[in-house]
Length: 361
Ligand SMILES: *Cc1c(COP(=O)(O)O)cnc(C)c1O
Image (cartoon, rainbow, N blue to C red):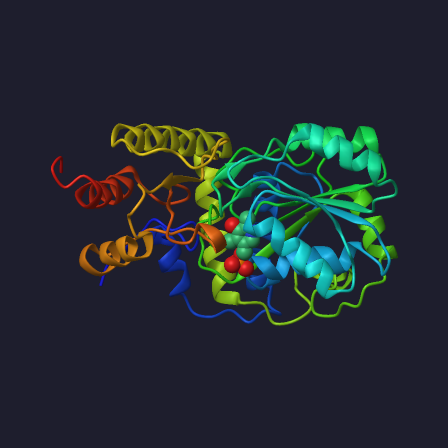
């Protein structure tokens, strides 16, 4: 059964990525695997726009979030999480699970992180070790101005690390790790990077590496120091998901072939198209600062979003995401990143229109 996936992860895969996964399994301590692995990491540096090292983990995106917390912080450290939705809250929960009590700056869902609010919080809470942001908060469809936010952190607290979750952003929404002064940027394989779920990545600045050496929280599987020591041998410390590495290497080859600026432009164009079409249908956008990776749409009062999504999935085989946490049933989220095409978005919009404006469809 063919489904059209319009969900913000997992996203559909290019045909050559499926093909890469049907090749014979490589052993992870061979030069063949090593070449594929290091090529993927080199291509990731290109996508991240960084000269720093990139690490690969066998985990979903949340594993990379946890790895950032345990590798950068020590018991008693002060950290700040600028929350713009469900994924900001996840950073806070992870930090609490390790006994830390982060300062939380909260935005009303649908709004990007506010620079003035951040500036005030930085002034009130000196001595922060790290400040955590989302690039794109997938739960609300918002994009944060990371260049601006990182500059505010640098000015107020030059020693604080800028840590970014770009799990849904990288490879789809513009990001310049080095030029914007980001210290750590984590991501996952299954969104803009057009591979299946199961791999996560972290890119680090030199400052971030110094923090990793000094950090004291407990860590083992996610210890970035161990991963870095394996890099010269083109290896990971433990058995990686070799099939997914083959898939990711091929997907990155496609991104490199297209050119990352062209990927950003293509994604932005499909986003602008989607936003316009939704508004033509008489629906409003949930995000005040909308990202290009997905469009979050308010449902008219009285529409049961959960039932709507299920009906579209069961009868038309199109998967659209609903709202998370308190937005459950109230919004739908239509992704347009990675391998998602205009024809897929059109099919999703048509299915929505048919149910929301039966007389016009
Ligand atoms: C998808 C996502 C995550 C979580 O990733 P999992 O792969 O589900 O663990 C975290 N942050 C953001 C912004 C995401 O979009």
